[in-house]
Image (cartoon, helix red, strand yellow):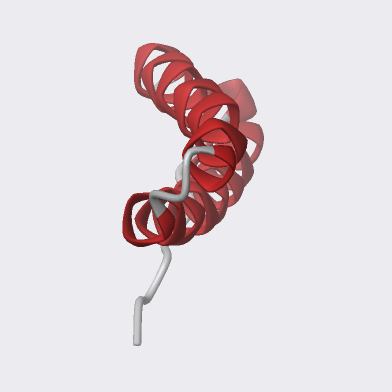
Length: 66
């Protein structure tokens, strides 16, 4: 779980860095894509961190996605 979180954090950092660069260069389509992807990664990180926190002590959390 921690490895997945770390990889997502790296990807998020890249997106957050590149978005303003693309805005400045007029690449709005790419900047918008990076903003959307960053938002989705933030949501994924929130879920993974909640699951990771709930699994402390070997307990398992059941999550239902709708």
